[in-house]
Structures are given as C-alpha cells and as structure tokens.
Amino acid sequence: MKILAICGSPHRGNTYEVLSKIEEDYPDIDYKLLMLGELNLQKCIGCYGCVLYGEEHCPLKDDRDMIIQEIMDADGVIFASSINVNHIPALMKDFMGRLGFMSHRPPFYGKYAMVMAVCAMFGAKQANEYMKGIFTTFGFDVVSCAELGVATKTKKEIAWNQEKVTKAFNTLIDRIKQGQKSTPTLRQILHFYLFKTISEYNKEHYQADYQYYKDKTEFASDRKPSFFKKMLAQLMVKNMMWDFSKNRL
Ligand SMILES: Cc1cc2nc3c(=O)[nH]c(=O)nc-3n(C[C@H](O)[C@H](O)[C@H](O)COP(=O)(O)O)c2cc1C
Image (cartoon, rainbow, N blue to C red; front, side, top):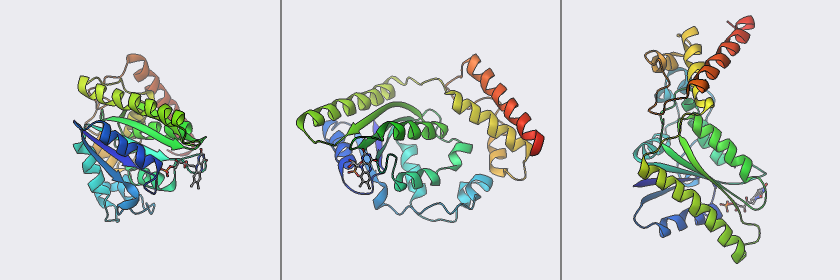
C-alpha cells in the first residue's frame, strides 16, 4: 500500500514529527512524505488559465505536476497542516490554490484521504473542516480526520495525540484495504451539476470544463449518489441558475 503525506507546515516541526512517526510505526507501508516548503511551488497568479483552458496552460513551471503525479500514484493521501492564526498557513492555502481548477474538474474521484491539523490550542477543527471540504470537491473520499494539540508537550498530551493519529490512520488504511468507498457528498454532486450546467451555458469561456463535462451525464464515480442527494443537488442547481439568469445569463 502506498501512502503519500503532504505537509503544509513551513518547517520540520510538530506536524513533520507526527508524520515521520507514522512512517516509523508502519514499516510495511510504502510511505512518502513531501514537505511543501521544501519544494518549488509558486503562488497562483490568478490568470485563470487552468480553469478556463486547462491546467497545462498554467504559466508557472514548478513542482505542481510532480505532486499531482505522486497523488495519482498513491492509494491514500494525508493532508497535514500546522495552524497559524486559527487556520491553515499560507503555504497550505497556496498549494490548494494551485490545484483550484480541480474544484471545476475533479480528477481524484474516490481517492482515499485523511486530513490532519496540528495546533497549540485552537484552530485545528475549523482547519480540518475547511481542508476536508476543499479536498472533497477535488474528488477525494476523506475518510478520517485528526485534530492535534501540542500546547503542553506532556506525556499525557503526547499519548492523547498518538491515539488520535493512530485511529485516523488506521481508518485510512482499513478503508483502502477493504476498497470501501463513501457515497458522494451533496457538495460533490452539487459541483458536478453546477459546473456542467455553467460550462454548457458558456462553452467558449469555460472551454476546459466543457470538454470535461460534455460526455458525462452522471456524477463520474463508482460511488453512486443516493436518489435523494441527486434530486436535491439538481434542484439547488436549478434554483441557482434561475437566480443567475435574472442578471447574468
Ligand atoms: C505565527 C504562529 C501562529 C500560531 N497561531 C496559532 C493559533 O492560532 N492557534 C493555535 O492553537 N496555535 C497556533 N500556533 C502554534 C502552532 O500551531 C503549533 O506550534 C503547531 O504545532 C505548529 O506546527 P508546526 O511545528 O508543524 O509548524 C501558532 C504558531 C505560530 C508560529
């Protein structure tokens, strides 16, 4: 089993330590840790080329595609972040920004993921909720979360963190072993119908989205959405489009 850990902390600190400990504790797993801060990953300049024309049109030539390939090759991914002023640090956010086109055209349907946030006291929960939401729109099946706190560094705190990491990581690897997929979230289905509909309204503008969606009639996944979620998502998109149409279509 191949697991990729992506560390969004800008240095080899507590988050790195926790991710390294997983590697030590699970020697049978083919484990790779990428420190975003040590890669050549530039900040998105907002040209919108990736969204409109395709990700290959990004003018920044750096390690983005190497990271995407590593994700493709992995059975599961850990997205781990430190907390800086109650949220993910800019490094993690910049990384997500460079993958932003994936919210329009998710390439990772069904790929298993875990999110982990390491704070002193506060911020890990909202950071995990945010990361889970965004990586879900990229297609990931986020099956576990760990919120860690390192304020005291007592033995008790270390054991408390260790228990949470082990539980979340075991969930990740069990789900991979079983091949058990979650049903798509409402947000994933909503994105599917919304971007498909918008790309059909404006084929020339959203060229890459149009190419991606034109032959897809269903949410592209082996994770079948429930009838209720599908209907609700379609209704929400109809409502949004009706709202849009008053001023923007
Ligand atoms: C500039 C800065 C801001 C921080 N803000 C918070 C915060 O809002 N809440 C919190 O609980 N911890 C905060 N911390 C503490 C870090 O989240 C904590 O030390 C964490 O372990 C850092 O992970 P790292 O060592 O992997 O970078 C902050 C640390 C720094 C350097």
